[in-house]
Length: 375
Image 1 (cartoon, helix red, strand yellow):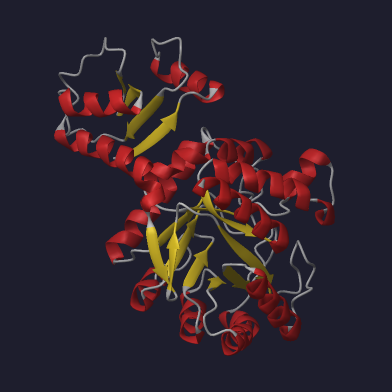
Image 2 (cartoon, rainbow, N blue to C red):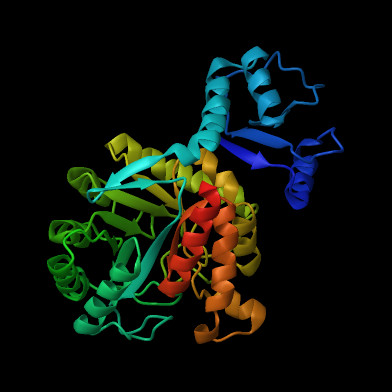
């Protein structure tokens, strides 16, 4: 079973769930729902008042609606099966306590009622964004040091392009690109928080050995299942992202029946696997642009807060993505301002780490957001 909080104040979202469940309310402002999907056949939903305006059942799914207070009261007083109650309460608690999360990563406490900047270093000759600008080690290290000194919180080093249509490279090639860069950054800035952007357990292990403290896996642990063990062994953080397929084919006619619940369910499954291995510093990323249509990306951004009920900090990576260019007919080099607008929106909608190429804008945005949050 998977449980998810849904903000039904959103008109499109309310219409979607009203159509599915036949909701009997008209004024949905301030109304939330908690859906439990995939209720097993051995867990009975008998005895639930199906005429209620608060509880709805359709096939193997259940939806409870109301204000958070009403939902909490219904959970405690209803005749719903205890296992379903647990799922409902867990989603509610995760959503409400999301900003209380604190992770110790690389000797630093990340307190997720605040926003953080992840700066991108692509040590590749074919990056969609910077066109190989940092493929040279010296250039990559210099920009990383500049980022750190100006206030970037996490340096994300990647040696394999993940742009749509890109071809994979070998472990050895990826290692030869990223390890010298990580070694040099750590040599100059020993306290740097470095993330290795890889799907390969061998690369992750060597990067963590060299001083990285986060693994940023676009496959969410799907391409190389041993990556979870590596992360656990180093007590590292991990970013679990959703991707429809491998970069080579991910944009070949992607399709979703309902993108938010499908991405949510994927992240729920992969984070559960990671947690069962013993990883306790999990960050989630809905994977904007990775096997998504324009409307999918926009739906995920608009409903990002629903992902809070998974119980993990949310990272968003939409910097200079092609959907921005396609909507506004903008080349890569003119997408930064729109990226910053979207980053600001997602921070207000639950994101706590923004992955960006224009780190100066990212730093400014997070500083203002954090100032407003603290007042």
